[in-house]
Figure 1 (cartoon, rainbow, N blue to C red):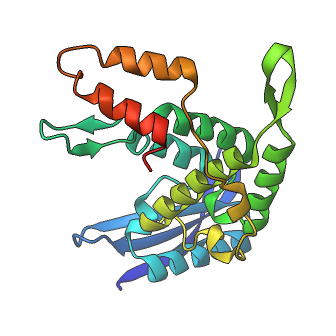
Figure 2 (tube, rainbow, N blue to C red):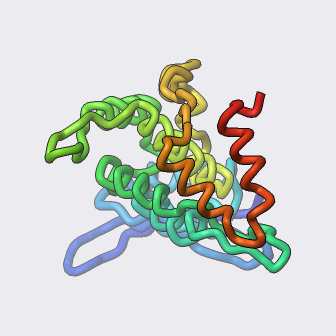
Length: 233
């Protein structure tokens, strides 16, 4: 990999600074420059060393992205990943996700907790602290009461967080996903992901049967009655 580097003494607004410059070639052979300006010569050399390591380990693309903080990752996911699902005429999903509002709610909680923290500084300890923080949080309950956030809700949020960090790794914005260092059941616990037991109430059953009174759904009425009364056994 071709590159050259150097630290140059410059004057900015009447003050002396040290500009670490790394000249490299991108994937198309075009020459580019990356700068790391610091107050001391040692700091500039250290910043330049880290920049060189990123170039050698992850390639030119690692120096060209602007996603370095969690807030920037959240913005990227909101604009590119967690959009309302779009389908073509054949019913195939083109982009986005179903129930995008749920993911946007997750992003709000992530932004409040991680803020502008750098992606490379997020550790498994930070993820565990987020889990504890959310389990201690409350939401509006019935009759103006406050109820704790359910473990299942927090588990779904952590699954979204894990997917976001894998997206960052896939785009070479981080080297490793902190979730990779978690022990089994340490962060996303199997006991938190309890299956929901959904059943029809009597009023729900009446609504469903009334919805089958139309010409194109009339054939479903008998099937639904048998399924409800027998449990499909």
